[in-house]
Structures are given as C-alpha cells and as structure tokens.
Image (tube, rainbow, N blue to C red; front, side, top):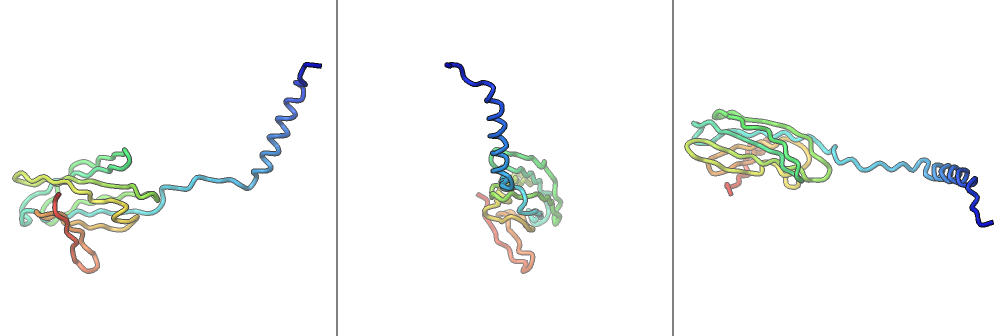
Amino acid sequence: MGSSPKHLIVPIVVVLSVLMDHTCEGQQHEPPSISDPGTVLIKIQNDVANNSATLTVHCRRVDRGYEVDLGAHDVAPYSYYKFSFETMKIPVTAYNCSFQWPPKNYHDFNIFFQARDGDEGENKWVVHDWGPCLRNTETGNEDCRNWS
C-alpha cells in the first residue's frame, strides 16, 4: 500500500481550478492606467537679439531613461515652434530644450517638467537673451527664468 493514487491527481486539479475560477469570478483587477491625464501644447517664441536673429530650438523628452528627440528647428524672429504630447498619471514627463542663436549663444532649459507644470494645457514660452519666460495667455504677464 505504499503506492500513491495517481488516478486521483487529474480530478483534484480539475476541481481546484474550477473552485479558484468560481472564487475569483467578478474580481478582475486591472492595473491602473498610467497614460491618460491629458495633452500638453508647448509653444516657444523667438524674441532673442532684439528680434534680429534666428533661434535654433532642439527639444528632447527625457524621463526615466525614455528619450524622444524632436530634432532641431529654426525659428525666425517673432515666430514660434510648437509641439504637443500626452502626459502620464505619474508625473514623470519632462522635456529639455537647447537654444542657440548667433553669434555664439547656447543655453539649455527644462521647458516642461510635469511635476512643476501640471498634466495638461498650453505653455507659451518666450525666449529672450536673458532667459525663457512663461507667458500667461490671459494676462500677458511673464514669469521669467534666468539661464542656468
């Protein structure tokens, strides 16, 4: 009588799987979505060198090892470059842009940082020689930052 009843293994597995399926019925748990807070529009206006120079803007998405290069764009005086993107529920989205104009001006700036700027909306930046300014579209006031 030392042998095990192998003929019972299959029916036991079937019964257990039916019981587990019945117990978990209606309790489906999907992982929370991390991709649906909103859309952000970034506008970058050229106001460098008394509006006499072309501004080269090069932006990259840089968050948690994920990088998207938007390429370099030449922006004429008084004109702007714009791009949009989707944010995530977890505030990790960030875009860094470099700005270059003659004769030898070069600066970097975090044009969007989700924890600072929110999940959605329009951000209009005006780039001056001394730094970028976030323009309030309702009042026209600017919140300026110095180049670091």
